[in-house]
Image (cartoon, rainbow, N blue to C red; front, side):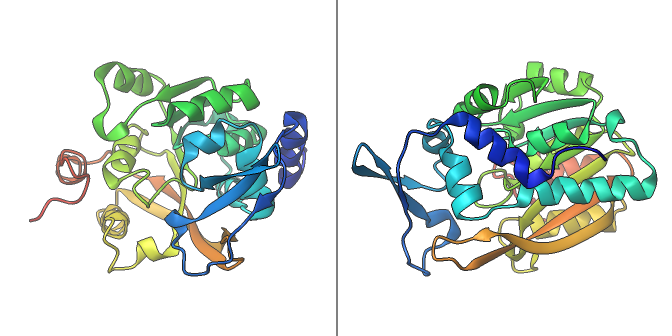
Length: 281
């Protein structure tokens, strides 16, 4: 397809943002867990500390998230996940222009930008953080047809009606699964809104797919496959980014086809539980 190279897209966006902060100082503590990482950012000669998972604070400062996560820490997940989706679509002879996508955990629009470049028909962003919507509309106007602030695990009737009326046939979520950001209940609810025959593209840290994983994602993905609800079409392990101590963080990107509607027992087990975890049977 004739479009700009993906790495150039976010760099061009960043140049337009004209960031006003100074140097970024990263700790060299290799013992920090991924959800404990932080960076010190200079403003008017003074350093201010930001935890990398405090999205509202990062999104509020134009260009900070892109500079920190994508430039300094070399994150590549939006392009890798959407690129893998594109490869599978080509294999199936499917037209990206027919995709009506829900971008779950849309953040400030990095994945939406990639989907927009792919030429999809419609993109609806969903995030639980109001600052994410503000940043996406500020920095990437026109990428999203709609952007909802909603909790998919506790979705209100009006938002569910809006999403179902969009006749979604693709679910994309990048860098948002695990670490308590999007629980299995929210992921399952989003998948339920995608029509049979639709597509699913997501990534998750490789550790969350092990049998000993306590988040529930390993069991959920295995259950969806074993029950022939989804069929995996592509899987790719890759370096998502480096840690603040320059250690590689590996994720797995997956693209699957939704074969049929989610049965009642799946919805009862994964969505209708307050914890968002699988009900004991």
